[in-house]
Length: 500
Image (cartoon, rainbow, N blue to C red; front, side, top):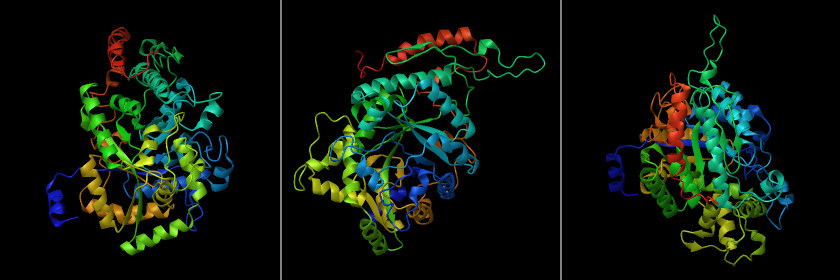
């Protein structure tokens, strides 16, 4: 990086980044002598240590990835033996169960929790989501996914997952039900608790939602009262055309599963354009994050030596099984020098798959993919070097691709990666003015600290779900009339959904 470039960056207003620590109870480097990630598969104490360390670095959130079934698409369908032997994404603790413990041992950090729209009925899930927001005092975000592992279909859906685009049809309806239950069923001031007159909730402050759709028939009313954020921060992870449309309407934070700069830049542009032109949203009300594997050293040589050391404890079978399950492509069927091609019947992560097998528009062989995956992780990109070197690269990615931050921790040794980020990288980012030295809203909600605005507990006014909220002092009759008029307008903009 030239001195002129550094000066130009210094002169620009500093965007405040969002930085999360990604965890899931499993890591590719579990063989490493210093790695203790397996504790995250069963120990609440390990998760408390994780959250407290992340909060020490003032990180925005612990981002908890999740899968609902074993990876099992390598060397034949339903083959779970290699993932089990290699410790590939097992064991997986149920993430919502962690929130109460983590919230009582921290004060500011948020919790981005992955939950699939295929795992349970939305009525039941809405209560779990509301409970988490209550017990964390508003520090919860929902990372909405529709699942892609073939094993999920076998375990939960009596066979196969619905086709990719149809999953988004169901996901959109699923979210509508949860919107209804959390926002439109109880008035903000529903709980009166009038001891003198013996009225806990006036009956006219609760209403049925009466949702009838292609997949769900949910009359309501909900069984829980309004939560601190009214609706947890919405995170969306998906880069397909359907995923980007869904994000443009609903997401507040978009997680782009790619490290291809051209794909990232285009996705950010596409979502912002859709959000503004189609859904009337301010593009600044959407934040974009990418995954990042950061390997740090006090010298560049130290960082490179860590990489060499990590590779000693990386299994190619782990890599191959992971790639095969994420993409739906059984890589065992290809020779080392053979170009890997997408399978026409694959129902996995479409955009991520394309990004991996055509990295930078260059088609990849099996050997290319395994070597890159081994060293850098799923999306083939790592930031390696001193805090200053890594910060330079990260700044370049933020500025050139218009992203807002990173989920750190993929393909890393735990807790070393997080300790290095907190002790080495965060101070450098703070010195550059791109990351806060204190939480923007101490003791605030997840949404307040993501947007850096005290009082921003609920959606921005331009969010399509903003008008679904039943505000205090609004009569049931008036609200019923408003919702009846607004919902067809809101849902009618989804021309991208399959209406069959």
